[in-house]
Amino acid sequence: MKRLLLVLLLTVSACGRAADESTPEPLSQELCSTEWYQAVEDATGTGDGQGHGPDLGSDEWKSVVEFKLGVRGASDVPPRSSEAWCRYIDAKLRSDSSATAGPGPAYSCDGVETGSIEELVCLDAELSLLDRQLTAVYRDALSKAANEHPPTLKAEQRGWIKGRDDCWKSDDERSCVETAYQQRIAGLQARYRLTSFTGPVYYFCDGNRSNEVVVTFFDTDPATLIAERGDSVSLMYRQRSASGARYEGRNESFWDHHGEARITWGYGAPEMRCEKTR
Image: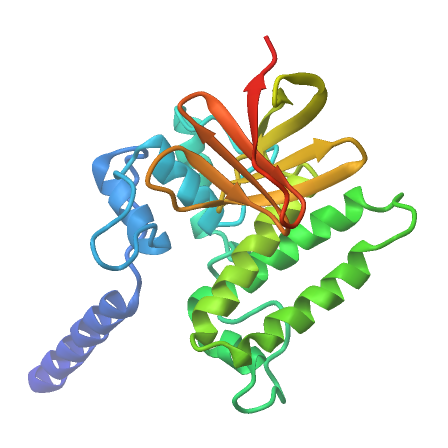
């Protein structure tokens, strides 16, 4: 009888240990602590996997965390300097409806073609997350575009999907797909004012005040701007640059260098030297 009781106790103990080992550790209860920041970092992965990334707990780091969770620019996100921000992110990570909770993209992976770009997204956790983020941003953009005439957003999205799927032609399919998602998310956030922005900022070019370019800068990833010149509008994405802030669009570019902006507008057009209006 005693041997049977001992066996039962050991069995219960072993089961308890197995349950503990299979249960993921919750985030630290001490919000905004170094340990809590590290738990959030482990859950979201703001770096590049090679030890490079924003400083833990910095405003830049918090901005990337918001982006990873698909909430950057959302009206209900508290200020990053507050404990309410930590409480919001903590709840977001714990929630079953969190952007990190889903195992795949927003679309069904059943029956996707083997070797297709759709399959690539299904098999890649980071690309799947980007797809879910884009779906959320696109839904918000649709609500803003409800009164657009003519309604073009749905047609544009179909065109974007075709362009994404053409990444099979690229030498680096994954990088092509990742860039396509990042730019589409940023472009929709800028175009439909779904994130914070600075501006408009007015520039006059080549010493002619009637030659004006109006620029609005958006807190997206990658950073974007929308420039307007007369009846023309250009969406531009920030590029890597040794100095200054350089943006490029379809046939336009903007380079803010030492307080002076250099702008090209149109294919093959000469570069204009532009100054902010005072």
